[in-house]
Image 1 (cartoon, rainbow, N blue to C red):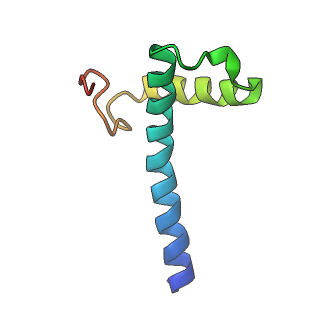
Image 2: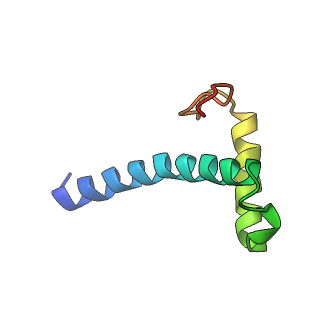
Length: 72
């Protein structure tokens, strides 16, 4: 595997982790009233809902942060 391929693979892995961070950020902003889900473009809301549905089905295997853990 050449260095360029390794760099792209590393970036892809980091992107997957960062997506979860963004989901949690959106949830926090909605919970404190800073953001309404209706503020999101329909396409973004659809993608967010698809990911949330997939996470519910795969509960535990993709969770990087325990949803029950009180972080704030």
